[in-house]
Image (cartoon, rainbow, N blue to C red; front, side):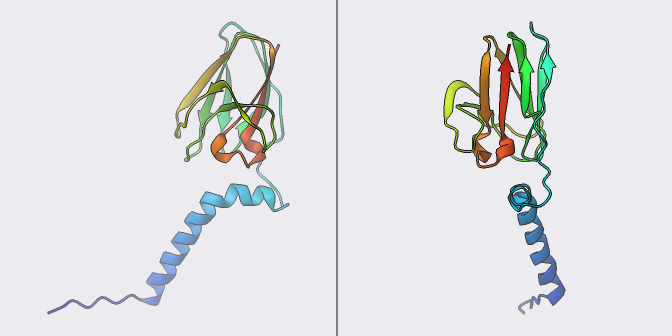
Length: 147
């Protein structure tokens, strides 16, 4: 005897809601930033750090680098930590625009939630970077000014 399976309308409704929520979570950050409404993108901020291995942290959360702009002394090691549940990377770029070109100064490769990437800025100058996976998002671009 063959078992008969039947789907109740409420089961289908729950499945549709679960799928819709997953899509919204995956795309929610970029759609709120481009909709003209309130955005969770942090304002550009600056921080200072001492050189000679003092270190400075940049958080990656909600598809944004925080702080987005950072001023450090030559010799400072900057560490990026991925606090998002998706892959990110940190790759040097020509500027902070979404049309920036990547450069060969530094590149982390993709790293997952809880993982870090560090780079020591030995020479004075302005260094731009982006997450190449999410380069179309303005908050996924940053700037390090080394004095």
